[in-house]
Image (cartoon, rainbow, N blue to C red; front, top):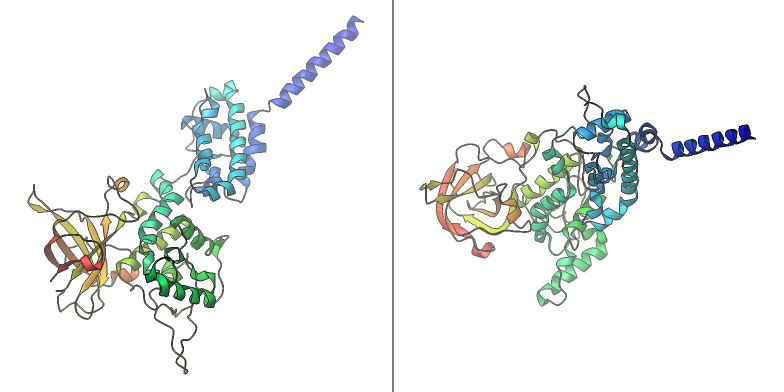
Length: 452
């Protein structure tokens, strides 16, 4: 009888041990069942909610559980004392506080799956004394993105949105009223004709006319959605350029349309259908010129977005400064040298007078770009060139400059350098000419600062 009891007791102990073992799988087992599927998945991780490129949760997973744990532990990404407070979990859950509610909802399920997997694995590792005492890896393997923090931050969608607001959204009224329905006010008598014009175009061409939505976020989201890529290739209708051309940003309809002429007239005097393929024509006619400040700003955003999306930035040196902030200040220079050809592209940089040093500041506070008119005039709206310390103080929708004594330094694009790199700034050499004035920095074209 005692022998029978001993057998029963042994079986119970083995059963309990087996149950405990099944309830507490090894870190390696958790790694294989929970983290490896994330690593092997062809789909991007939830990181795409906040990052266009440069980082993926797969970057934080090495081939083995042991290597992954030691690397994350030694980088401070795992809190061995309080596993739930691990930084890697905080990084995954950052999407929960995304102000873009739609994006937050879309990625919620995937984000929770990743969080639960890492949380389970981390807790399992932190209960393993051998792992806790393991020495640092002797190899150069490191779990995490290979790119710098600056490149990773540059690919964040909130940074891309901020740039969109400054460079594109701030200039949207160039497309009024045809593409800006949210700016039309039925209670404003001045908007009666614009409202009718917009209505006529929508009836003729459909809702695609409504490019600018109520908010910058809605607008950017719609532009991106209309220009999606499949795999590594962008797809769009044959014969039509996309609003955002990821392979050739300068051939995006977003800049091709407003710089295009009216379509040709038919024998009956009516206009032909506007074209969305090369050569592009625009029923609204020319709204900006290739080479002016708005074109430069829009193309700057398009090129930067495409480069960020495709992960083309590999070092800090390749990143654009991304420090242009719009203003409503306009400069008009009426005394351009006669030797400068009409329609030549000119950049104007604004330097302040420093009373203490009694000299002009080395770095410009603002710039604009424009074309020389046949009457030898340059008109341009200024963009503030913000310093790193200024960026948090400036409104991305528009900022102001204080009046004062300034010097305008003009640079003509003699070598046609802007044709190859439209976002280039030309002030790395000596200016072609300068002007001095006491700038009032008024608002709008009517209050422009004029150099006679």
